[in-house]
Length: 257
Image 1 (spheres, rainbow, N blue to C red):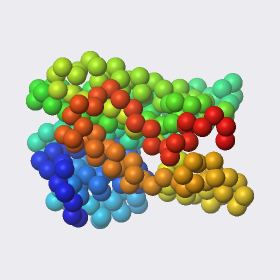
Image 2 (cartoon, rainbow, N blue to C red; image 1 turned 60 degrees about the vertical axis):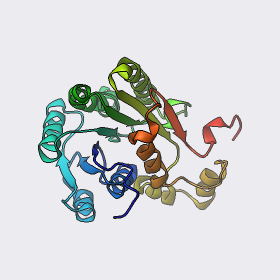
Image 3 (tube, one colour; image 1 turned 180 degrees about the horizontal axis):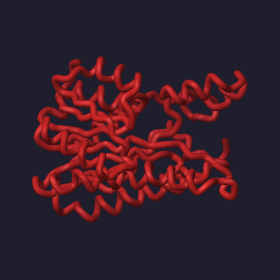
């Protein structure tokens, strides 16, 4: 991998990162000189593929469920044992939970918040002590356009993403004077493997409709989110804090579709 080494000397932890946006972020960070701990909740075929791509010189795979605080602490400890510290945390692990509010089970509610919100906090809580000790650190949370606009039928996912943006702003302000920056990214429709499968399942007319409602008339690419995560993780963004960046091609700014 080659790059401009914008993250040279930094160690990053990227959760949920064996496919889609997370994998693109790991790829970009490695290309820019970082050492990276990458993660999935299970050691499956996508994890094996990612390990083969990233190698083991500057990358370490750790299987851990972010909803399990003890597993997260162990993951962070392994990253520190291997690379010495964690300078950058990217909370990308998440799960889509869409349901009718009154038909949703308590298990669905708990699953959404245990991963999309509490999982983020588990990781933040694990890396913050070391960052505070060094007086430096960048946390990037992957939120969603669902944290800005409401789509019927998507409950309770938007609730968790609104809360995640609130967590981002709150932590960013809480620790700003101690050298910690906390920001979030809100992707719109991005061509991850999951979205590819979803689009392929739609009739051609509906698939084209999903593209046509985007002002730029195309679906976003995972690497476009990765470049923004790279910027926020780097020292180039040292005066950006408690901020959310939308990456949706302008879609959320339209009043009419």
